[in-house]
Length: 69
Image (cartoon, rainbow, N blue to C red; front, side, top):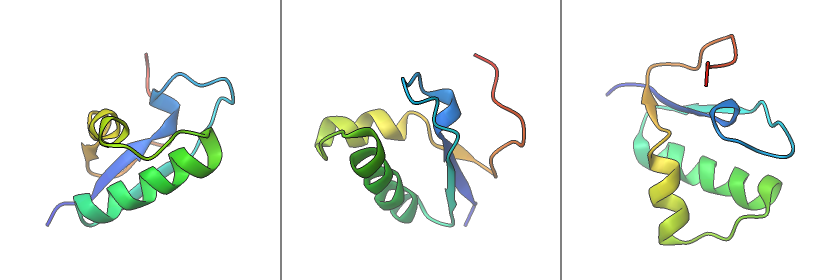
């Protein structure tokens, strides 16, 4: 099993969110990412949101520095 992460710094946002989430499974990461997107960014949980979030999943752990655009 490979550690996976999603980094909000990769997504354009009015709030300039700096949260990065990591988990040992894609399912666990998706659950956390959806909860964050809904509670902090006012997105609605939907299949489209989950599809979009999955595009930002990476193997490994989040970098310390902001990812370059």
